[in-house]
Structure formats: structure tokens, C-alpha cells
Image 1 (tube, one colour):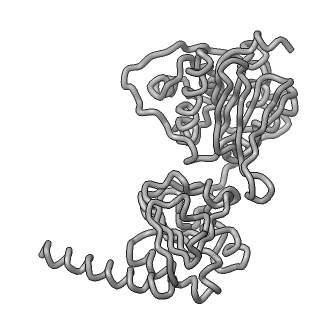
Image 2 (cartoon, one colour):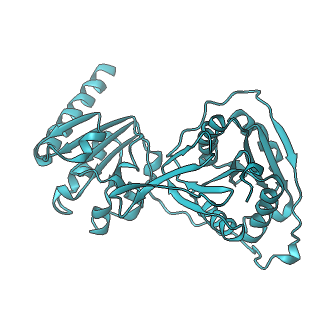
Image 3 (cartoon, helix red, strand yellow):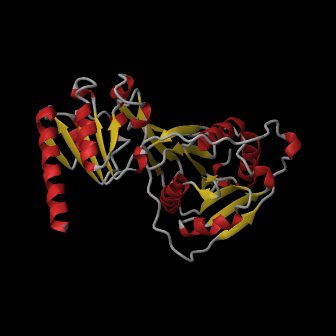
Length: 341
């Protein structure tokens, strides 16, 4: 490969129910930093039906160019059609880097494209950087069960590709009125070439706590001893009107459901306030909550790694400290209610 032929940072723009999925805007923010270091352009690849108008939003969030495949064949996501469009776009314009959100769609598409090009793919990256002189993408992610951070390189092939979880990167502040270049493309694939047909989409709604949308999260770890001890987390969360989070070992022990899990194999969260109670602070957990606005840790081990990532740390027995916090918060809320009356 002649690496000089490959230029520009691309972001696959995922669209759901006619709107841009937030992780795509977050990746434009990360992609802008990479593009600036390489003095190259940032582009979004927009695939779907009736999506061309969304390009204006992408310009506002940092995209210089938007490649659009707008056709009824792309109404619903199918691996074959989306992969064909993205492959043809890659082969025509040769990007240096492509970033995808680590959603079910993004992960499926990225792995299919990586197999067909072929090139490398780093999954679930939490840190992205690029060498200014060589253009080598430095994609870092936890490895060996979260015990170390590994930086993965793709030295021999282009484009370099990575998936990134929602909430890990930050979107740029939009610039209303910012414009860019629109490139309309047409994929060669036809409906009769696609083996998969979408007959019907059935949406089944279940009531689940979306901890990735919560402003306050109270998370607990195995330091709470057992499922009964973990009830302290529920009590504090209820008092504060927050959501319940948990470390991986708590979920594996069956104390709470998997949708409460925070970390590399769970959910990445960015609440305004994050309580870490009885959580030691393994890298696998830290990467899932390190961008929280305020992190408060409670642990009886003064050397627990969690304190290195916290704004405030309380060393002591959670079974003594948390009930005191609950009582103080209740008193404060009652005073606030009285003052308003």
C-alpha cells in the first residue's frame, strides 16, 4: 500500500428513526482532534433514506465533507447494502482513518468492512490519538480483563479503523450556520442482489433504568459483602433520585441485572455525580465512569485504586458512612421543602 494515497478522518454516521445517533456526533468531536493533528479534513459518511438534510447538522458538529448515500435501498440497516456503499466510498476516496460508534449497527458494519477490505479493527476503544508525522492511529482499550491498557496499532494497512463506545468521547459545541462540502454518491448494489429482506420491525418496550442518561448514579461493588449489603446502594439512590450502578463482579454474583453494570463490558456513563461504594477501581470499571462530573468514592482500603480517579474520597466502613449520608440528605431535602413552603 502507498500510504500517501490515504488521507482524511472519516466517521460513519449512524441514523435511527430519522435522527443522528449521538455517538456519531461524539466521534466527530474526536475525529476533529485527529484531523487537526494531521492537517487533513474530517468527513462523515451518511447512509440511509431521506437523510441528505442531516448533512447540515454534521457541518455544525465539525464535518468538513459529508459523503451521502441516500436511496430507498438503505431505508433499513442491512449489512450487505451498507457494507457495499462504504466499501465503494473507501476504495474511491481512500480515507486514512474510519471511526464507528460501538453500537450494534456500528460493530456489525465495522467488522464486515474490515473483513472485506481487508484491514485491522480495534474494538471498544476508549482513547484515540494519532502520530502527527506518520498518521499511525493509536487506539487504546483495556485488555487482559481490564488489568492493563493496551494501545493497538495497524501498521501495514489502510484505512485504520476503530469502534468507540457512546459517552466516551465528547461532541464539539455546534457552530450554527457552519457549512461544508456535500458529495452525493450512488452504490452499485441492487435490491435483487441483497439476500436479507426486512419484512417487519417489531418494537418491544420494556421498562429499564437507563443509567447512561442519569444525572446521579450510586454504584456499588463486592466490598458491600452480599446482596443484602448492596441494598445500601438502592437506598442512597432512592434518596437522591438517582440510578443504581454496579461493578462487573456484583452483576456476575447476581445481585443486580446486567443493565446496571458500569465499565468496559457494561455501560459507559457520564453523570453529574457518581458515587462509587465498595468498588476497588479496576481499569475495566474506571473507563466506564471516569468522565463523570463529580466522583465520590467510599472504601475502607485507603490504597484502593478508585481514589486515584475520584474528586472526593471517604476512607471508612460504608455501612456506617452511607446511612449517615442518607440521613443528612433527607434532612437537607426536608429543609428545602420547608423553605419553599
